[in-house]
Length: 222
Image (cartoon, rainbow, N blue to C red):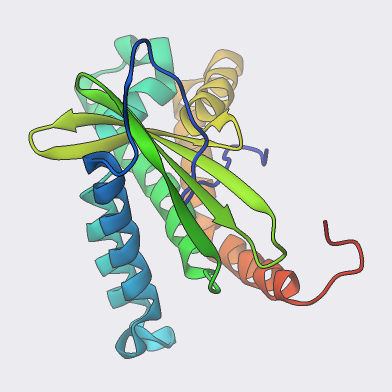
């Protein structure tokens, strides 16, 4: 788990609900797949390749991600009990910065996609809540399970948490955010978020370097 974020996004591990209804090819899986396919189409579009197209490509990706993620719910859960002590202005500020950080990490992760296999394992529904399972098979043949926890709003299933290899993205943020606020202040948290967002391009470069390494045969693979 990296500090201040387990960078999520494409796969899933099953989370259980009480008396769930099994749906091997249900509506949740369909909607998650539609979003994933749309994002990968943007990443692989020849017309959006090259540094000069970065802004437009990222704009289209952001619009697609925003349609599937419930940022308000994720931000409120990530900051936990501290939410009650925030003013409306602070809630808006935190939600905006939190969503920007997670989104940038998500898009950076997706942009390093190099043909890894994405397996959709099905979903479970319990009323207006559900979970969809996905497994990403890396180029080395390693399975990475990811679980999308969703809530139905209207006709859409919106993601409010992502569980990667058994670790909740929201819980991971909550523990780190709480530690910062408890040891310092809300203002210190905001400063940290802004610093992380500003450092995005450097982290993106590191991910690309890592992706290149992943594609080369390694003696210690597996």
